[in-house]
Length: 226
Image 1: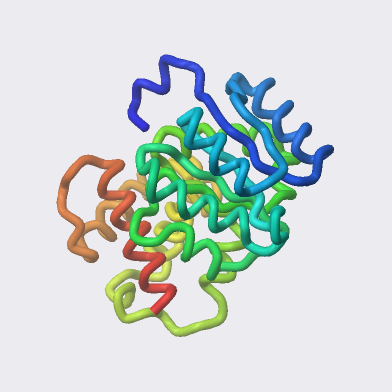
Image 2 (image 1 turned 90 degrees about the vertical axis):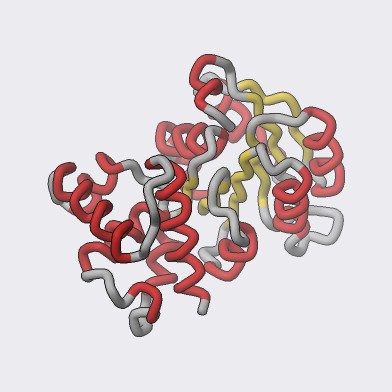
């Protein structure tokens, strides 16, 4: 999931048992410039097809046949293990932080967890899938909000100011510095200042900007789970 993807068409597989919704997702992604190489309505078949095609990113619903339970989530987790360089975006109707944390595990790069309603915002959805394909993350704002309410500040995040925690939460949603600035109504320069400060306070050393962001998000999600 390197920067090489900026210069080539992103390949994607889609798993969704609702035919109309699946066709809508395929159309949105195709019109957004991505190449859908496989679509299926069964989690087992989706897993097999994705392993065969080895796309840059896989998009799958949590609840799918054959059992209509969390089959899609299980398939996504298995893909994360077997194709670690591939991005995975899970779609759901329910804002369940526990599912998101289980999917992310100890590796928040190349993962997305979005409510199905976000597909309606075509530009944002396509951007999120592309971001995950390139190794970034895309967590639904509602999921992140539920992780934040209402609970005491985890010990691991105690050194951060409320503003720094808000910046870190927005970072966990996959937002860029510019996106964080818009979301929090502050300047990009202020965001950069807060990001630098939270890296320092969390003892995240300089290993490249994107690498440090991934480690910061992981630290945040782990702290919310503990």
